[in-house]
Length: 155
Image (cartoon, rainbow, N blue to C red; front, side, top):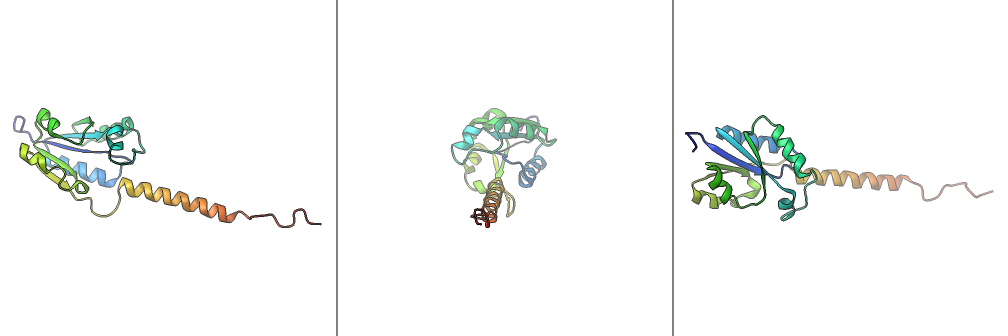
């Protein structure tokens, strides 16, 4: 704690910002006197999954525009040991799709909370829905076009 303040850190890609992102950040805010939100760089995200759709600087600005974070910082690594030590983090909040990944922080005296996204919206699901919808639209357009125009060239 810093002067009896609880410092909470949460982080994510925050690509295609949606309701579950907001819920997790608000949950972290409820635990915190000081909330720090890390936004993963494009390079970091690309090291473990498909690159983000929204560029890093834009994702950073979206998170900065929220009223809940006190501080928004870039995140360049999934190892939070250094950030925890440098910023005196008391608690870390991350989506439960990372279950168990950050338990090592407990050894540093950090409480780790795996926020339950539950079913529903995720950036990956949004991307798949958009892709599938686009593919279906292309397919229906291909089927709607006739192979030949009847009556042309016939006398």
